[in-house]
Image (cartoon, rainbow, N blue to C red):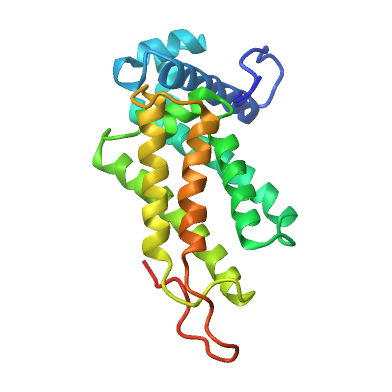
Length: 230
């Protein structure tokens, strides 16, 4: 089953305490993913709802998490990791391609990783928004991580003579902002489009930006690196 974190069934008898705890935590995470990502959503869910869905007690919940927000925060990291691993798995396979084809393959891998399970998409782009300052900080930290990834790819393209050397952080932040905004609006139904249409539109933005870049500087001239520190 796509998106399953750990098996949600099984007997505890005769197993180590660490194994039982890992399964219990996994059942809460699975219940949270179902309720936050599939319905009714984080704000309409109570701890008792999560416990009922997991088949566990509130006492057991508090042994794993302090609040419902803690559960959401952990799920947010999990779904981001799934999307990130989808991209990293493709990265070694595209190094021989030109810049446009590399970026296209990498972004399609991201889109697939972020949307294969609709529950992941909703947690990543909708349920996490505006929950608390702490969760907003986590969300923005993950956004910076994607910006850093794009900057690293830009640095590699500069080294290969495909891009001029400059600060690409603003462009990367603008693109990630567009991805998050459009994915949010599509997930909540404000944009009537297929996933392919959403992916293609974002790719057109990325490719158009790359194609309007000036030619790289002459060999031997390399200004400061393309990504300034955040």
